Length: 437
Ligand SMILES: Cc1ncc(COP(=O)(O)O)c(C=O)c1O
Image 1 (cartoon, rainbow, N blue to C red):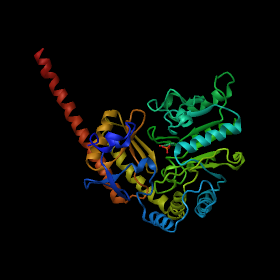
Image 2: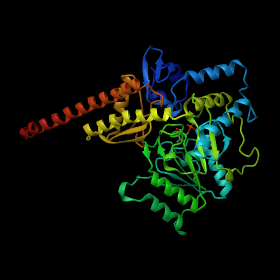
Image 3: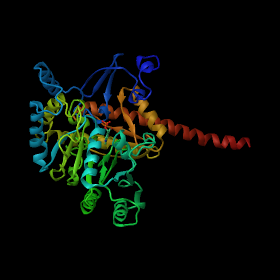
Image 4: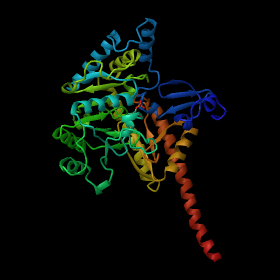
């Protein structure tokens, strides 16, 4: 299909998601996507977490249409606009203030990687240090500095930011290594060969790296160390934030106060490019225009982001809904782990950010492919793409969620049955072979 299409002929080979999901999409509403052949798909990908409230949520769409119809300004550089002012007010009053968080807002370039670049730039400027610490399986983007922080070997390039020290993430070495004790030693030892870093950057739940969840204890200890050594603690909440793990920020549960917080993806609520760096006030030491650019704030995104906060974050209804839906996901996944321990290595996650790790990455691939054949869009993650990644919209109807989960259950069951038959056949065939000897 793709080979003969306009995409195969003219678009760069670098294209990615469309290879797994080759259908041509026409429309999307809520948790459904529609293609040109009249198929309807359940979406468990949510554009890698950039449409947490589903596709085209009506109230956001109306706000955008009204803004466009009124000739509201779109391109405005970083000038004051009513749209920006209203977003700032709502974000401050509804997100920061109730959580007793004091941060200044920097509107960076519109993608996730741009906000990471700005965060590291600020930390280096402030501390006068070059080195940055990042974790195994971390993913922070694909531009110069952020690529240096990203762990995945396939994505890394010969030339990138090399002033990065890689640390083992919580649980990376199982019981064999206390990762926090290791870091403490590296920092304390003047001969460790590691320069004191400007910053330590991490995701509290690693998305692309395989849905690895850091414990609250580990996060608190990490914050303690960063305070002790004057290191910026940067939480990359680009994928895990905006409600994905059950609360607006993924680190709320741990009760930590990062120096810098990176937000993007679902911040606009509508899939519009929009990023925000939250800066603890004492670190807001930029000179005017020092970190400048054209698309610093996207006015349409201000409108939808403000509306999304008003719609979903003024009370705890969404949080309660996420909890209920999380228990549906958890019980389905636990059931698969209990029934098929020979195939499923582990299940893990938080909020509506879950993964099923299979022993065999080839099986994960086959399962994702079969899910697509049954009209469920689901992606894989982890170093070998061995984890099936569940990211339904936070607002998904319970019934659609249940349907998506039952597709996964059916497909895993189908492969488990096949596997069992194959194993039985191999057992049966051994004595016959032996009889021939
Ligand atoms: C945690 C995290 N940081 C940064 C990025 C980079 O964002 P973008 O692709 O918008 O540059 C991503 C993208 O998936 C991400 O998941």
